[in-house]
Length: 152
Length: 334
Picture 1 (cartoon, helix red, strand yellow):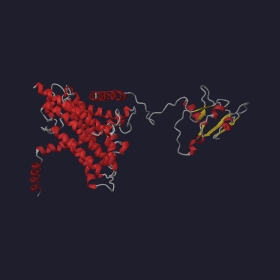
Picture 2 (cartoon, one colour):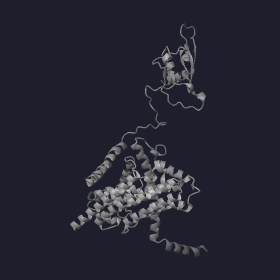
Picture 3 (tube, one colour):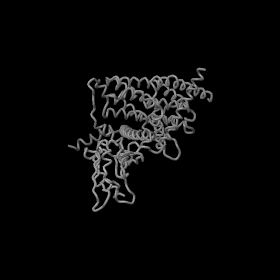
Picture 4 (spheres, chains in turn orange, red):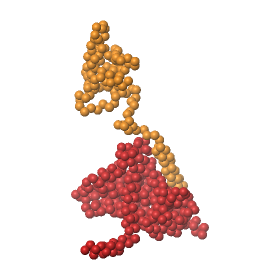
């Protein structure tokens, strides 16, 4: 019985050598999963929460922000600053001309996105958020919006 | 005045640069270049195989697909300081890397790259390879001992016990091939395989040799002497710069030699259709090396007692049984 088990162990052990290679060798030829980051950019998941940005309106050149200040009041960290003007001679709503956030103190809670009555805000897909100075982390959303529009 | 000196100089050179010595010098240079190129290539292969098994791209930045990465590593090691700790035994510490690498140079004398491409076909070539690759262990022991470091010492002690254990099944399996060929010369063994490769006749011996030789080269899953999790880097923990690189060079050269011996013993050496002999030989050698590289990412490291159990309770009895059966069959056929 001892000899039988001994031989059985050796045969099954030898078989695992073959099995092991059948697992790892095919793995060698399967496509690579990692991204060569600085050379390739990531595509973020739709649920990703970057800093906020002004939502793009397809086919229009303006944004929806009316500088009502709801987001400024809602922000628990107080990082949003909005300024608006009334268009010349126009009745009714103002238009936002300045929209700054200090991303270094933003906690990404998303309350501003939730409270915005115009649905003008959304989370961006931006993930390269390292900066050299803390003033670099102050993001001008209007400028960002214009740059995005130019890129189309 | 120069006219007086020159004939004497030429005579002197002609006396010393006899064809044998020239062949030896050229051979040595070729072997050194071969060792370096082989090691650099294998380091690259190792990085790439490791990466692709884990579905990473591996080195990609230096040169085309990171091809120059091992070269840059070598340059970096050349530029590093040779640290010698105060407590080490200086003489032994310095000569240990040399003891590790020099015997491997000798082994290249008898490796048959082709029908004519062999430095010297000694009639006991196989014996020469095994006796000199056994010296490798002495270097590891000396290095570990001289480092005056508990991890180095433990690593080298493990290496010695492992090598002693695995030398035996290797020699016994080789013996079962040798009693078939009646020759210890590498070319003689290849000549005996002109009709059929010995891996067909001796599959068990081939597997045993493969497993035992992987252990002999301290490769994973048998890299007990340098088990990172337990012993930092084992016997070469205290080494830096080119001294460390020599240990590395020795490991990769050892892999090449072991694979070359396997190709000679079981795969018909340089024999093969269409392509010239040396290319066949290198194809066979690097196919085997590839298997060893993949083995690193396939099998978990053995515990020390499992390692010893495998050698003494499995490999040696199987090798002995294989030798016995081979001898019996040869006797009956005669």
